[in-house]
Length: 466
Image (cartoon, rainbow, N blue to C red):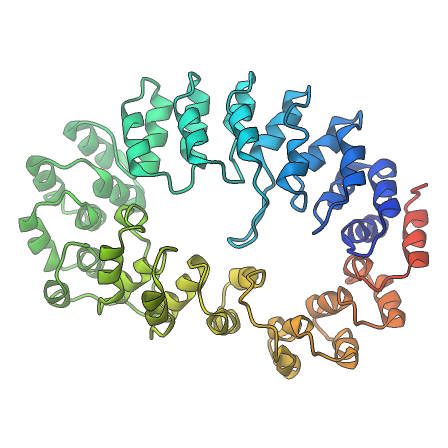
C-alpha cells in the first residue's frame, strides 16, 4: 500500500464523521497499525469493539486493548482474553503523551483481577500507562515474583514513601535498586559509597550519590573533604547533612553549591537570603528528592510559595494540591518558570495563564495544555495575523471564527496550520478536497468532519479496502 493511501486511511479512521461501516471496513480490510487508529478516535462505536473482541488476529484485539480513545469498560472486555499477550496490553493500557491527555482507567475490579493474573508478565505490565487503585499497587508490591515488584515500583507514579521504604530491604537486588531509585536514596555502607563516588566519572552521578547517601557524621565529613564540587553540591541537598556543614557550604566558593544549599527546606528566609545564590530566568533547577515527597505538605508548600527564592516557588508549583489562594499567587509570579510549572502541574491553573504560557513558551510541550477545559476559546481568532504559526493554529478553537477565516488559514505557509484548519468542520468542502490531495495535509484532510461520504469511499477504494 502506498504511503499516501496509508496516511489518508489513518486520517479517515480518526474522522469523527466516519460512519461505523467505514470504520469496520478499515478494521477488517486493512493491514498493520492503521487498524489501531479506529481506537484512537474520541468515540469508538460498540460495533467496532465487538468486531475487535471476537477477531481471530490477536494484533487486532491488541489494538483495542491499548486504544487511546476506547473507554476503560471497552478495553476491559479483553481482560479475560485467552492470550496473555493481549491481557498484558490491557493491563499496560494506552500510552498517552501529554500530562493532561488521560486515557480512561480500567474498572477497579478488573485491575484487581489482572493483579492476580496467572501470567507474571500481565501483572508486571499492570498500570504501566494508566492509573490503578492504591490497593492494587499494594498487591503488586507484595507479589511473590520480584519482576512484578520491581515493575510496580517504577510505574506507581508518586508512590508514597511509606510504601516504598520497606522494599529497600527486599531480598531481590533488582527490587532494592528500584526502591532506592524511587525513594532517591543510595544504598551501601559508608565505605561502599566512598568507593562508588571515587570510581564514578560522571559529575551528575557523583552529585546524585552524595545527595541520596545515608549520612553519618564521619561520612559527611569525608565526602566534604573530597574537594569535589559535584560531591559538595550533592551534599548540600542531602537532608541528613549536619548543620555545621550546611553553614560551611553556604559560604562555598562554588555558585552551584551555594545554590543547592539555599534550596534546603528547613532554612529560614533570613538564613536563605544571607547566602549568595543566583537564579536566572533561563536557569534550570532540578527539584531535590524532598520536593516529590512533600507535595501534599501544604504547610511546607505555603512556605515555598511565600519564599523570596524563585527556586522554592518553582518547587511549590510542582504540587497539584495547592489551594486557590496559593494558585493565584503563583499565577502572578514574576518568574516565568514558576508560572509555566503551575500550568503543567495544577488542575486549576487559570485559563488565561494557560494561554499566556503557551504563547510565551519556547518548548515543544507548550500545546499539552490545549485539552484542558479551562483553556480559553473565545477571541482566539485575533491570532490570525500572528507571526507565530502555533498562535495562528489556535484560531480553529474559536467557536466564533468565520468559515472564511478558516479557509484563508488553510492556505497558510505553515503545514501545521493548514492541517489544523483541515480538521475544522467549517472548512468548505471544495478546499478540504484540495488538501486531501496535498502531500503535507492529506492525512489531516482525511480527518476533516466535512469530508463527503463519496470521498471516504474513494479513500477506501484507493487503498484496496473492500
